[in-house]
Image 1 (cartoon, one colour):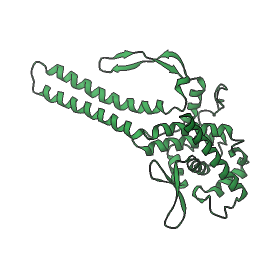
Image 2: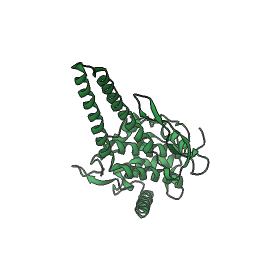
Image 3: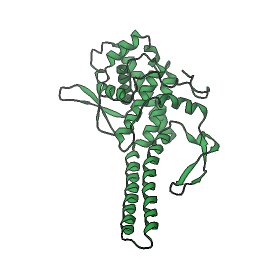
Image 4: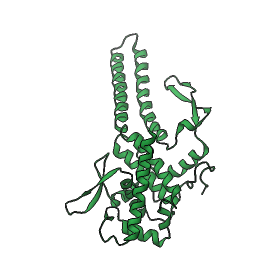
Length: 295
């Protein structure tokens, strides 16, 4: 597991460094090697804003750190997102069907009518709870920190039976302060409402990568250049393969979704989810440093 993660990280760093070294050596991209992520335009803006050195691996250590952390969790759940969502839908459907069955029995009357209606209501509420819990599951699970390292602390309410208002108090690990401080930054933007497809999980990663670039490079970095950097990030991380269209132009095809990831398409997506609405809720800071500095 560790070897696999180390290999992915090493490969990303190498691809990222080689890409930038190649582009800096040929900023006009005379061989059209960087057209798939609009590298020339990205180079021009970063150079004009004096941010070019900040994207290089040596100077961009903190940026690389946050990018790899998002990548790690995407890889962990990308193959399971669809299966988990389908399983949850099966549970919700089964609860709904049972609730309907109890209501039909109650409609026939008899001494058990009220009790049957109570059970139908309980099953219906359980289905609603399951829908909400599924959204919460992804929101909390896609928290790019290793929960095994968290200390155990406060107990949190966990509703077991919403109908009878029964609760238990499991001991759950409390994330360190820096976790929640960083999440203030990432949660300043919007995300897909659910993760019923790998495409939505890919969108989650793209949004968070864009937040990293906007937060750590400059709030004045254009959303278009942030989109270019995200496309490059996905390519260097091995999340897709370069393909050629009918006109011979290269583009990145994502492995998990088999969809084309273009700069313009990603730009519109990031704009839709509010990534251009800077400033965010804070700034990302180095790990174990007390967290980000409040904006």
